[in-house]
Structure formats: structure tokens, C-alpha cells
Image (cartoon, rainbow, N blue to C red; front, side):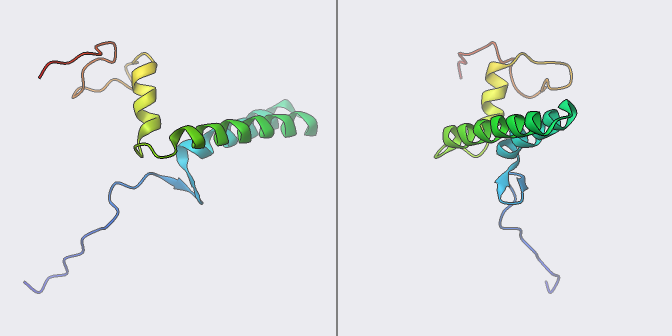
Length: 99
């Protein structure tokens, strides 16, 4: 009875990268990498601006929605692959479920 019973308060929090959610930070990081691969400062700046615009757009879409909205959207709008297929859920092309 005297054992340490630590109960985490935030078990299902979204992954964070600093102050950003990981799905909002991903476009900026990806476009920064693409801009770095382009090899010029101008291309890096343009790619970074595109990444910032995409992340702001995604953050505005995600506002006041479920924390896993981005993963739900990806599940319903992209075809499954053997890597991303889930066994416990129906295929994403089945939109109407009875029960």
C-alpha cells in the first residue's frame, strides 16, 4: 500500500517539437531539408517560406478539432500500404459502417 503510485496526467498528448505539434512542424522541417538540398540560399529561403506557409495552413485547419485530426485525415484520404495498414480498423475505402 505504501508503494509509489505515479499516475501520468498527460498520457495521450500529441508529440511536440519545441512548442509545435509534430504534424505542424513536419512541413517546415521537410521544406528546410529540400531547400538545403537545392544548394542555394535563395532556394533555401523560398522552400522555408513555403514550409512556414504550409505549417500555418495546417495549424489553422487543425484549430478546435480533435488532437489526432491530421492522422485521421491521412487515414481517410490516402491509400493504405503494407507499412501503414492497421489490423484493428476497417479499410479506409469503407465509409459506411453498420453497428
